[in-house]
Length: 275
Picture 1 (cartoon, rainbow, N blue to C red):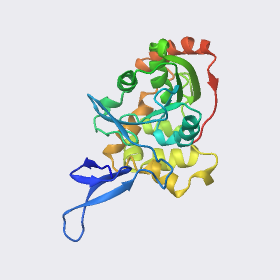
Picture 2 (cartoon, rainbow, N blue to C red):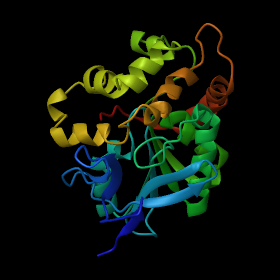
Picture 3 (cartoon, rainbow, N blue to C red):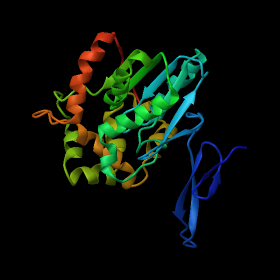
Picture 4 (cartoon, one colour):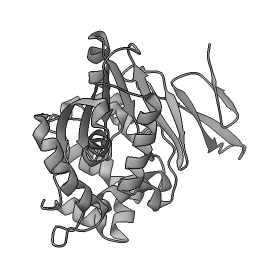
């Protein structure tokens, strides 16, 4: 059996050893997380080292298959595409699903500056360029839009198709009340990092139409990556990266202005998605 060395604990593939404290002895106790979530995410973890920390991704299917890159948003992770990977690989495609830094199984630094959109773009570019993809289809959702599309338009020679799900539409949008609260200094920290409201409130309630599909294993899959205050830093930064609709400036506003005319001519297919 193959094993990984994480935190000085030998753990089986699909599991991670997290360190807790035993109430009886005060000694560290290993808490195992089953990252397959009852078989819903049975894919082999792969790792890519960046200057900001280690990124997780899956790379399934034949190496010579047409690559399909699936880029998630906030507060989800690659698990969002769990029902895409099997059909894609069965059809002969190569499915590549990265986790942004701070999400899924990627590391979760506490420094907010590491989660600015240009840093996400640079890390995704480094990962995808390391794979030397050709004839790729890029699938993007939510913040995966400006991040994944930035790579696509920068490397048109590597991309032959776009599949755009619900995503960031630029600074003209009206912000929902929860996002206003998450953007408020102090209030956002308490709601997002303290009470995990981006997942428990925004995703599990307002973000889902068919709540009956949120089984116990699905809920565990979305809660597992962010068990602590500091591990939710990435979730908090994303809404604060949205340009102010009254004065849209900064790198995100500039990126969407550059992207829109370039990918609107591609005939990209639009489709909704769900967690």
